[in-house]
Length: 221
Image (cartoon, rainbow, N blue to C red; front, side, top):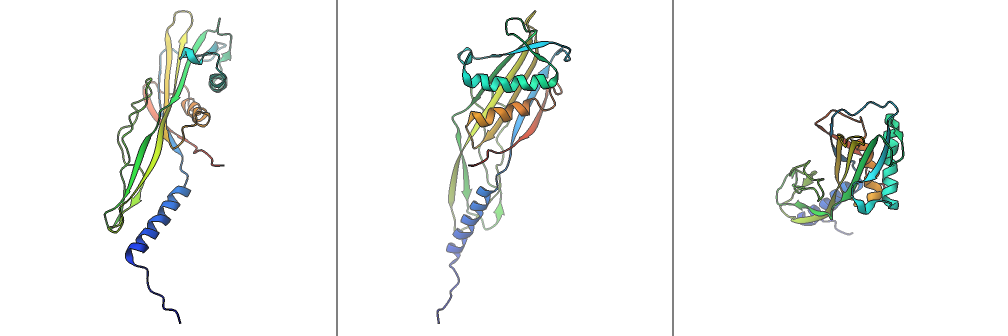
């Protein structure tokens, strides 16, 4: 008759840590977009025409830019503005987007005999003026065990969009909006549409207010 012995504490702890890590990986959570908007004499929709142009000249005429610019245009049409010719539109909409090269988020299991929070990273934004919405903060929940000292490293990315609306007649800037998010994805085709949606949620918003808009996580194939 075989004798069943209890698992050694270290083996049990490692197995429990692996199970918990798997549970975390399976819980796909949305991430927040930080949206900041400013406006000054932005006209209420009354037949004004607009044109979306690239803030970065290198994007002018690009197919990728055109796809994202169409999303911005759709949101402005939904708000009541009318798409027009870039050569004669009443409002010029400058649009830019980007994602950084990523940074590592380190999760450390141990050494503490209790459940607790783990520390993540302090985000610093990426170049081109998209940084500055978040500071260092805790990231997630973890567990510690005196028998375990495992470290998990995940690459996370900061992405952002920038929209500025100005009056063609005198160049007066009427609206400035930024949306940023931190996620495990660096795919602009996924990030930019969600950031555009976040930026135009409640458009034009309250001037000078920064709000967080929840963005759906990327679906895995």
